[in-house]
Length: 234
Image (cartoon, rainbow, N blue to C red; front, side, top):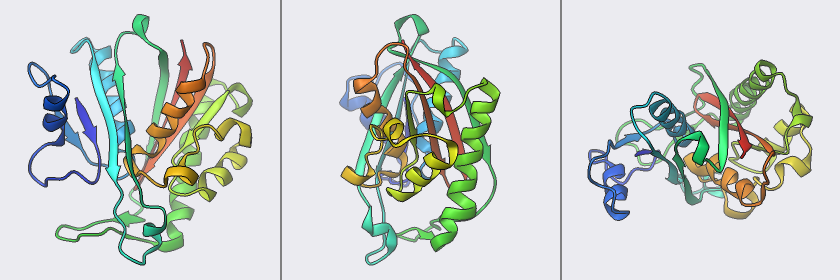
């Protein structure tokens, strides 16, 4: 069990053990917490893929959850929300959906940070859009499609990290995706920005209505790393 978040309730005490105890799975498992800004949830998914794929475990639980932090009066407060999603990663033959491939792109571009002893994060204002969000998410998405020999039209759905409504819509248009392809997973207009839960929660909405054969592109973002995954509904 791996829990990705940037709002863990304790600085020194894992969230994963609390969750494991709550669901009755606290014995004979490995548990750890992750913190990678808004990408912590999908980073946990990638780690779970590696664990199960290597044969070290039969099943793994990846969580992306947050209570978004925003200084009163700051732009971050406008979309701050709380939420999360959890995914059980297991054998392909038992899967509802198969994660076909994944890719990560990372640079050290400081657009968002919170130093020790600070209660609220700081950010680079419009710098968080370009060259931060748009550069990294577009490179991750485009590389994933190039490597898999696909284009936007090959996907039934797409979900991009959604700190607000404008960013994912603008990015989708740039990459050739339509409003129809992203509307199901675009939940920030409804629930706000759930940080590490943002793209995972969008994926859950898509899986609720997807049918076998549908292909999904998911791209997450956390300062300063983007990761993309291709998911096919079994």
